[in-house]
Figure 1: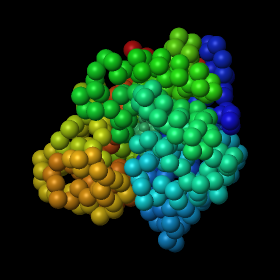
Figure 2: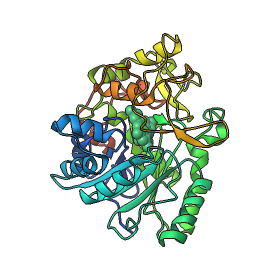
Figure 3: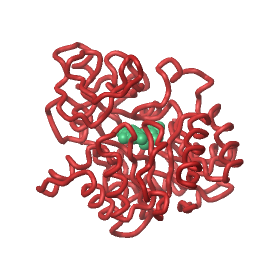
Length: 368
Ligand SMILES: Cc1cc2nc3c(=O)[nH]c(=O)nc-3n(C[C@H](O)[C@H](O)[C@H](O)COP(=O)(O)O)c2cc1C
């Protein structure tokens, strides 16, 4: 097993794994991941749309393999522990992103948005931590069984992402707000499974915002680490556009919603700020989505996956272009801003250093 770095947190009864969550498209790139890793956290690049972004940045067309290699190498320039977040649903680039990231020297693969039961050959023997993201003990059990059978590997850690997270959520629409699916209620069975099957760390994600939240998860629940998304999206180093960062600061509690129609074409619930221009446009059905990327898979009525194409339907927005727009890459679609349910608590943009100081308890924020 490969150990993840831990950092001391004031008041915590042990050192803690602190992961900056992968955020696509283009929100968590090398500048953010590098800054977090330099502070002893796990800095995570998102592989979503990476070939498109890196090709534009360097002025030369690169594929997903090359893009992952380039971005990881840049993030690792000053050392530290770098992960790459790869979504299983990004079927076209899944294997290339993994192998390219390993070539770039990545320390961990964080795999979500689907069950990563299949991994490319040779991954299990590479010196890289394998970390699935799950939303239940059942999903962890399935992954654990497949990885032991096929690769003779167990997860090096697991991220348990609850329903308060930003991005796509691993729950049905109906379950997102049910008490039984609160992170607090999902944690026990996942921790118990991990303890019994190799004692690998359990990292919680979704709604962790303050130093106090970290203490609660570590000291009261026994979590080994935390993964934060929205707080890191609202840093100077994040790749969110200036409008996206301002939208995070401006949004109110009631502005953060998980709509069903229009929703994400991936078929998973997707949390967003309802004032996002792209969401308002889709809501008013001004025109069909301008879909031309096809990064993701879509689940049909029978549960089969096909290439996502939102263009014929008003039920969804074009997830690729609204997210590329939120990074400032395209104006083909207006942006949609995804954040966690507690994102309304963010009231200023910080540097990663300032945020890390706050999270480890050096510089507590003023709260109402
Ligand atoms: C802007 C944004 C984009 C995200 N994109 C992804 C993604 O591409 N893949 C993924 O696995 N999780 C994604 N997430 C989820 C985060 O990695 C993280 O687990 C989650 O946001 C934690 O909840 P929090 O925002 O309440 O801290 C995203 C979250 C945000 C806020």
